[in-house]
Image (cartoon, rainbow, N blue to C red; front, side, top):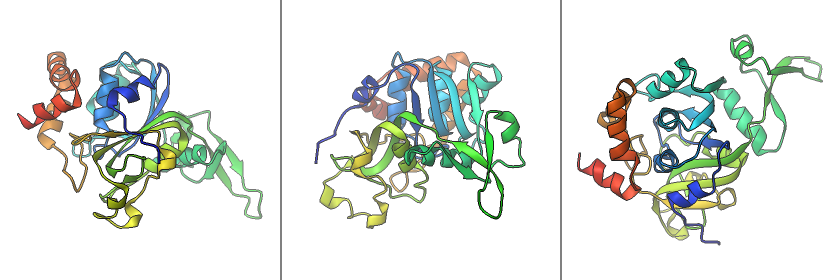
Length: 282
């Protein structure tokens, strides 16, 4: 196997202004935050983010990196609506393309299997169709003749995800209860980057979980970053839970520019190693 170990800065070096970047995880769960912070302190601009959005999208919106967000929701779980995302949207600083959660899944899957669209019932009879006037419907060619939404493929320039364990070749393991759609983000993207809590030998990947926890195969990965605490402050079970105190501190920065500046200086404009030290010193 190729050795695909790289750093956060190596990942950012592969990204360009205006790219469409998919970010895995789910709300405030298992977000690749060390990679997100690397983007936040870079010069990248005008990004389109595709995400079941949490602080990944919120932080990048707050720092002016984002032009457009394609999303199924934007939440911190215990804080229902991501505050920086809400602020950016209310102030008109970003374009928003909102879908039903299942529609977003179907759009990623369509891109992953190289189809222009996939039919779905999700979205029918809802304001999703009104808010997205470019959406079209198709009629089943079979006897049922059912009208369905033609969910367009959501193709990505790059995907970023975080897993519990990985080997140097890019095989990724999810040990928690919520694998969700990280594999679809990788399938839909031209370039795919995985951060992990710990790099292990390939032969040890099944020492902590059965083979069905190996959710990401190396054919879907171009680079692996070892980043202990890499999803913090979001949760990454069973390694750690959500840091609710830190999350509240982050959320408060949406209402105070001075607090945001202090937060960025302490937790964003620094290496991941220094970030871990700052977190442990709190």
